[in-house]
Length: 181
Length: 181
DNA sequence: TGGAGGTTTCTGTGAATACTGAAATGAAAG
DNA sequence: CTTTCATTTCAGTATTCACAGAAACCTCCA
Image (cartoon, rainbow over all chains, first blue to last red; front, side, top):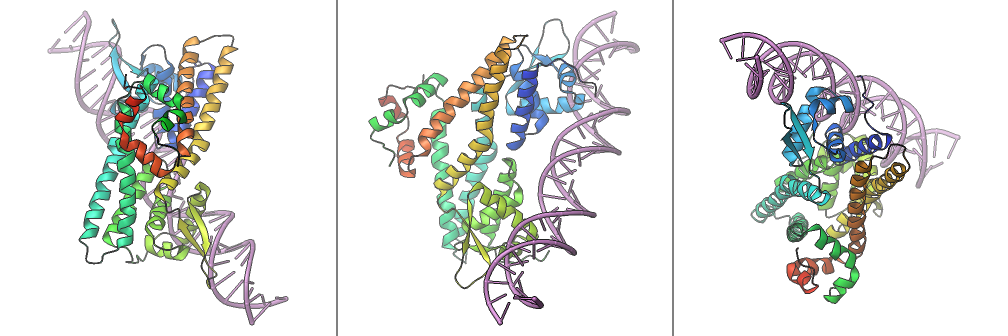
């Protein structure tokens, strides 16, 4: 339980907040904290350092790192002349969130699309028609199809293109004749 | 524990999936299930019906409904000639997700923006400078500022405008001279 | 003012999840 | 081949979270 005083007040504040944030979005608190630590670290860290800095068990760090690697946002790297594994977070913020979004889409949205299609298919051949449920599920399906299609197009864009687009705002879109109403 | 057989197979499948989905995104499973039920219901339901249909305790339903009302996606309504409260979900899918997004922004993103600004401010006046952490936090802040600004602009748009925009895809954006790179 | 129907709050219990420490496993160096 | 150091797996423990049932609390009506 011996805390290492390595972190500055600012770093600690950020890491704790990031942990809470993760928890809100269904990510384990410790996993999110470790990611925050790696994200602001200027160099790859070894597991033991993480253990000392965050004051959690070594095995917990090991499992959490594995999960982060599963998400594709943390990588194992090797430091010359050191046998131990070191870990680093993806550095670019845009790439980071794109990776997370891709992974959540794959794990959660795609299965939902599949399920909605199944439900609608089953509904059409059911003995008891229930057209109201079917209509609602179709609405949901359309929504997800449209938004994921949109995401697919945007995700390939460079951060700079995205920020240019964002900064153009309403103006750009009026040029296209796609007004707000 | 007596299950009412009110639900069709399709309805049950959808509600269970929606519950799991909610859990993945940090929403209580039962809360999400109740919302799913109300969403596909053609009429407002009273708490007792929900209890019977989902097989959970009355008090659980009461608390979950309160939470859904807190999110602004479920409303209490009254049915003529019936003293009991009835509940209905927001019907329009686009409005529904916009409401959820607004609320998550308010609860989670805005506080994160505030915290990042605080951290950066504190970092500039710290005795020990730590410019690397500060730079990373600035990158995060820029990212959130840009994306939330973008969201603010889009959120006022009608579903039809959004879907028109989405369906135009790359073409539209090339017209603006905002290519992918 | 009492009572009936309905809703919410509260407290204890159960289940799920996160976490630790030890044991087992693996890998490089001698 | 053996020793040493690092990592992972495993099993038990603790903590958090969800839930049920009872009690308390409204509100309308007689």
